[in-house]
Length: 230
Image (tube, rainbow, N blue to C red; front, top):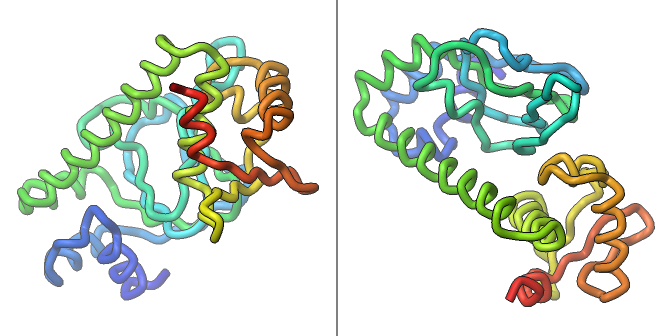
């Protein structure tokens, strides 16, 4: 993106939508457009926190890794998302890895410069707090699901969340969820095993709670899944 395209992209971003022309220009002036190739990393867990990223094109996997190399997927981000949210108010290292799942174009904003813009624009600071608040609620709901729900219920809630975020609504009201996530990915999102996810999805297909086509894409009826949680 050139500077004009970068400015237009940021102006359409939910976080900046209410800013005036001059305020948007201040953000665009400190932002840089960069490309990342598939399977590369935007940053590694533990790298010094330096930038906040806004996704123009592509998908980014945020995940943690323990000392044994086991992966825990925190989120799958797409166009219109920003990361990492902790970057604004936390010093030290990035708390997770950011892996590029497909060729991506990101707007890179240095945190030190962005903090100055926040100080000059209190209304933008309020919007940032709102975004952070929504993220806290999302993480709290996921934690509660792991603590209070059994694995079957966790998988149902995960499919509902993925359908709402990444799915496409069809004319009959069902959600088309492209086969972008392997069973291992799904398992890593909720801290279970690939085998457990595979058995559960097979059970759900037999009970006609979900459907899959020959490419592995899912057809999800959210009403049926919600009924399973009652």
